[in-house]
Image (cartoon, rainbow, N blue to C red; front, side, top):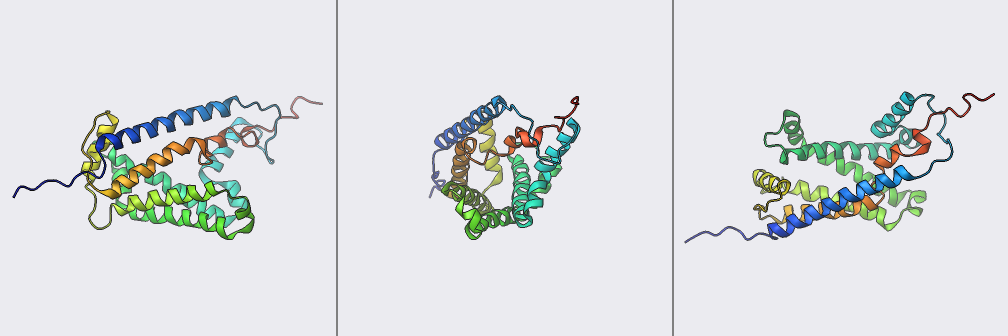
Length: 239
């Protein structure tokens, strides 16, 4: 008897169009938000004290805030643990996904692939901690909008759906890589018939669509914050 392959969960063409449209919205929305930040007038010199006295000091301050979350560390150690863990794991997980872009992945990408389980655990730890903080801490719960909870739940769903593809009957990563290569070259290529992969990609598409218009776009805004990117030179040249 002739064996037929499993039917696709969703057509490759439809899923490809959804992913490409979501990425286009993400890219255009991201650029538009950066232009909006750039054009905002800053009539006053209002750096948070103690402020750096030079541009090099401003750069050092921004790097410290971006990489180490120094202000958050001083303000609340537990929030810092959850927030830094989540962002650090997310950065490495994004690097891990470059496996699907490189034809021959470099060694550091292969290393990230080998520790994927630990990265998932660290990412979920940070997300659940931030979610629990919004539920348990009263002052945070009072200022939390429904979208704040939905963003965290969406990120958790993306992480769980992605991790599920490596548990049990794992998805064929070579076939996923072939599909991603087709996206990058605007070709419709066969997608592994696995509902976990389809759910993961659809959730990622939702994230890309809402990212430029949500609070998630706070990272680039940090570099445009006048309280952080200004030099303390208001008294220079004044008697």
